Length: 41
Image (cartoon, rainbow, N blue to C red; front, side, top):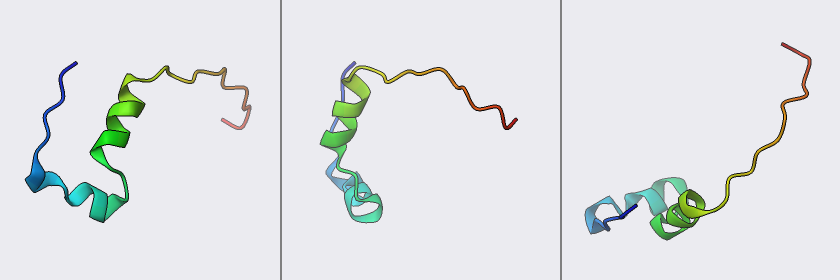
């Protein structure tokens, strides 16, 4: 997947504390999967 940087949208870091480069790492990383063993539903 290709990502495009937009300096005008840099506000995500200021607003949410998440940098776009961190988001790329999360999106390209291995997913963490586990069985939902909760029984409260």
